[in-house]
Image (tube, rainbow, N blue to C red; front, side):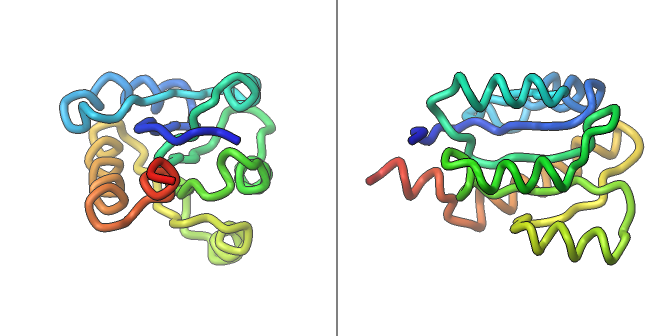
Length: 143
């Protein structure tokens, strides 16, 4: 079983990962960003890490990758099953959102199209999870 740590996994396209990682230290110095912009990077990271993230921001990976399939796999994995997963959607498609919540997404947030809007949205989202919620990572760390 994975231990818990103050990391945030951002699973998204390369540009979004780089933008978030570059600007992250200005706001959340106590958290480490792990950018994962291909499915193979995610699989390798799941296999090699002993520390589950505090939260996962799940965007769309390029190519044929299915966001809902990745959500299902992450929720089924022992190390990340309790980790809050925030799904970054491209549109407010009711059927898609319903399916994401059925697969145990903790929240769905519409992802902005520009990097200038991306960081404030992610900051607001993380403020909620870090400052208003008791995260499973913090509960498991004390056991």
